[in-house]
Structure formats: structure tokens, C-alpha cells
Image 1 (cartoon, one colour):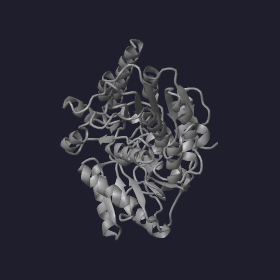
Image 2: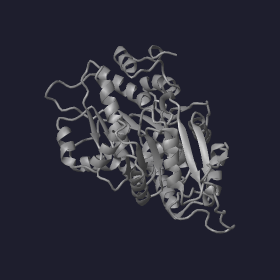
Image 3: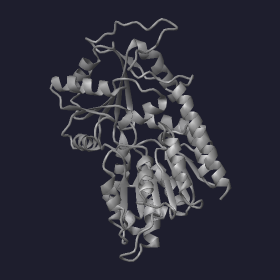
Image 4: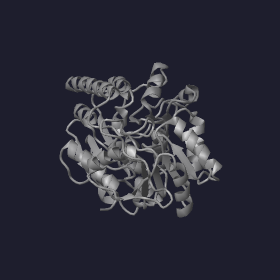
Amino acid sequence: MSFESLGLGAPLLAAARQRGYLGPTPIQSAAIPPALAGRDVQGAARTGSGKTQAFGWPVLQRLAQDGVPPEGRKRPVRALVLAPTRELAAQIGESLREDAQHLPAALKIAIAYGGVSINPQMMRLRGGADIVVATPGRLLDLVDHNAVSLADVQVLVLDEADRLLDLGFADELRRVLALLPPRRQTLLFSATFPQAVTALADALLDDPVRIALAGAGDESAAAAEARTSAAAHIHQRTITVDTAPRTQLLLKLIRDHGWKRVLVFVATQYAASHIASKLHVGGLKAEAFHGDLSQGRRTQLLDDFKASRLQVLVATDLAARGIDIEQLPVVVNYDLPRSADDYIHRIGRTGRAGEPGHAVSFVPAASEAHFRLIEKRLGQRVPREVIAGFEPTEAAPAKGAAEAPHGTGGVKGKRPSKKDKLRAADAARAAERAARAAKRR
């Protein structure tokens, strides 16, 4: 299949060529035609599969065809893209701006996220914008300051939809949805589709085209397919090692394999700073990346890492969603993530856009049962390795004892925590309210 056959016009065909695409990815082939036709779309696809262009190009083409207001008239916001993190919002916005340069109509694209002063963002919104890419909290701040109106939105895009229903976003999302026109096109994308996202999709989407790359028809199957396909193209290694020598093992692997860039995931902000400091003492250019850093510092670290001025980025799960780092050779799970979905998002930072990718997980004896749960949910088994000089001596905890020490990233089991229950209840209430609103259309 070619990009021409999808219905894209000459300007976006030029954008595809500039990006080096030889042809559309599976999610682009499936999502672009119905999106161009004005249909609602629910897309399940692994990270690094070209999702941004799958929704971005149809939005750009639709707005360009409709034209822009005459010079001097304020531009109404016609497309809204919501993302859960500052980094992802910035990445989507810059991607849209890059592709929009090929359009005959000069579209104005505004990016808004927290952690920085709101005043420059308000100034850039003077005169309006054709597209706003934002995190929910900062978008609501701008609405409260009368800096932006959502009354004219024609297209709503939710990227990383599962995360938008996590970490307290559900209430903010409900407030944003209440400000939108009831009749609009909605494009909803996620690499994983837990139950809360499925409920949201059912409430928000009107006769949608549902896409799962293996052709699965229901949401649970789509989620399983997305998990499996995300892991299948990445070479995964699991190393059994005691807890204490993990940093020395990490140093050895980086030196032995000659990794030029390594993204290391840990469970806590303290661990990120502590391990980055140890790696720095070991002679590596390493820095910590977590939510306590200023937005300016986070942006600088990502820029340095992408440009290979920084060899190792030791990060919390803040870096696990949506961030696109071209030709990243390896991801290391120093601490295990809490869930199989988080594992997929972490390792999805490597092996993007068809590039080879490698993921290494350290599994102390206390975390073995947790990693088995990840394997079970992925439907695969990763052979265990032992590295000479790092032979494990620790024993697994006795039955009934805690299976992983605090801070090592224990994986969520089948029994939800109190926080999980609160999130699920919040998401369910938001979905129910959205469903009632949809019925009133």
C-alpha cells in the first residue's frame, strides 16, 4: 500500500518523504482513510508504530482544506490534542509543526503544558490557534484565564488514552470534555486498552472504526494483541542478579557492549539520582530524569540524550510514555515496572520505526514471581541468564512474605491496591458522565 492510496494530498506526501517513510506503517494504513473520511477511530498499536502521523496527517489535511481566517481575524481552535505528559505534548506539537510546513495554508499550532510559566503560552494564544496540543491541567488553566475557548473544536485526539485515565487525569478529562461541542470527530489511540479506556471509548466514540493490528475485534483482544506485538520485535534479555551489585553489572554491560546511549528505568526519584551519580563516578556521562526536575531541565536532558551528548539517562516511568528517541539501542529495567502494560511502554522506547531494539531486565530473587506475572500477561517466556562474576546468592522470599523489597518496582498483581481502586472508580464515574453526555447529543 502507498501513501497516495490512503487519500493524502501532495503536501503530506511531501511530509512523508521528508520523514524518510518508504510506505505507511500498519496503523497508518488502517487509521488514515477513515480519519480522512471523518469517522471516529479507536486505534490500538504498539509504541513507535507511527501513531502521531496516523492521527496528525488527517487533522492537518482537514484543516488545510477548510482554510484559515483572513489576516487579523482570531483563529478558533478547530483541533485539540490531549497528551498525558509535558514531553509527549511537546513532541506531538513539534511533529505537527514540522509536517504543517508543507501545507499551502499556514496553520497555527500552539503547545501548552505545565511546569513552566503560563504567561508566554497565553501570549502565543493571542489571536487564537488552529490546533492546540496540551496536557489537561494546563489546558484548563488557560480556559480559566480566558486565553482559549474550546467551543469550536471539530476534532478531538486523545493520545496515550490509558494514561489520561490514570494518575488523577480522569476528573480533568471530564472537565475538558464538558467544554467541547457534542458533535465532533474523536480519534482515540493507545498502545494498551485496559477496561477504563474501553469504557471511555464506548462513551466518547460514535460508530467508530476500531483498529487492532492483528485484526482483533473486541477491546480485550486488542489490548492483548498490542502487548504481544510491542514485545515481539524487541530482543529481550533477563538477567538474574542479586540486588546490591546491579549497578556494577550495568556498568559492565555498557562497557562490554559499547552502548552509546542507554535508557535505564528505576522505581523512584531517589534511585534515579543515586544510580546516575554512581554511573557518573564510574566514568559515564549519566543524569537522572524524573518529575521533580524543572521543565527546562527535563527538556535539556532529553535534548542532550537524543543528541548523544549524554550516554545514560536514568529515569522513572515519566520517560516510559510516548517519548520518541531515534535509534535508541537499549533499554534497561534496573527495577521492574509495576505492570505488564508499563513494561511494554518502557521497552517500546527502543526498536522504534523498524529499528532493532534490545531490552534488558534485572531480576533479583525477590522479584522473580513478579516478572513471571509480566511474562504470563505477555504470553511469553524470556530465558534467564547469569553473568559470570555476578552469580546470584539471594534466595526467594518465603511463601507469604513480601515478594519484592520496597522501591524495587514490584509488579501489580491481580488484587488491586487502594490507589488502583480509587483510580478505577474515578475512571468509571468519568466514563458514565461522558456516556450520559453522549446520549444528550
